[in-house]
Image 1 (cartoon, rainbow, N blue to C red):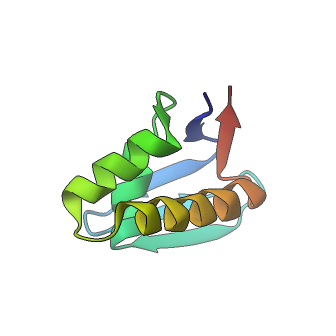
Image 2: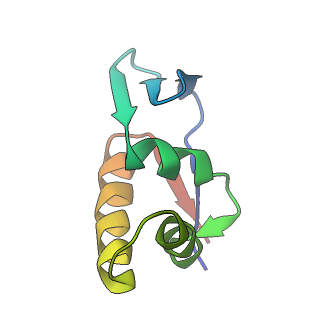
Length: 87
């Protein structure tokens, strides 16, 4: 199973309702709302299904749609070098 973790070299400043991520290349990304919740859950031990279940407990919605949305976000973050996916 694939688990997700913050990529090495990504610095995170938790500002409460927001998070400021700094990539190794020096680019910044501000996370808000559900993205903050998701980032806090990504710890290298959770699969997409685990993350979707945790977000489903936090927010109402169709579980399949939550999973699809998270997969899209995780793919985006992986493409930006923010997270890694390991088997």
